Image (cartoon, rainbow, N blue to C red):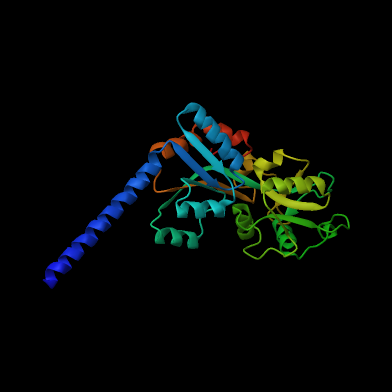
Length: 288
């Protein structure tokens, strides 16, 4: 009797497990094939993704693509929680996020759709001609507090950064600050457009933004030198692709599993000539 009961319990457990796996596969297939697609994540990429979505929907009138920002970290969290179909991210996933994905049976698949140069921006009246990576590090870690330390006028530095949920914040910290902490005096801004507005209004401020945002506001791009003996380089299509510009990065889309159905159609569109033209027109760097 006990043996029979045990077998029945075991059979019931296996049936429930198979049903759960089947439902998970069906949910994933439904997500891949549904006409409505949600994209969430990087504020750097919001304008790019919105423009791609609009063009895609014109070619596919039955499709609906909604795009929201919030930062790369927010987008990755949404992908892991199953609340977005696509995560737009200006940084790659961290190991702790990959571990969380594994725990939740999420399979993040990474696709590069464009490249970006992070531009250092100041007010046009600022006389600074170029800046080194070491100087940038000293500015953002608080070692430098006055423009005279960079050969400029005797004026205090107003240092602007994105907030910590931003992929640009994380990338800048890892590749410019060498993973050191930002100084507590650095002002954290909610969006790249906020940095552009602040730099446009404050003659002695400095900030960093994705290349697509340099078309806005009254700002000047400062050429960057790898070190004192290196040439000063301005971020551009050529200098990002040939890697002579120091602060460059890929722009990613993350999916749960290899994209199929309408998700693959949207991804493929972003990589077509038409999609890559939008990448260029919005100020970012095409794949080739």
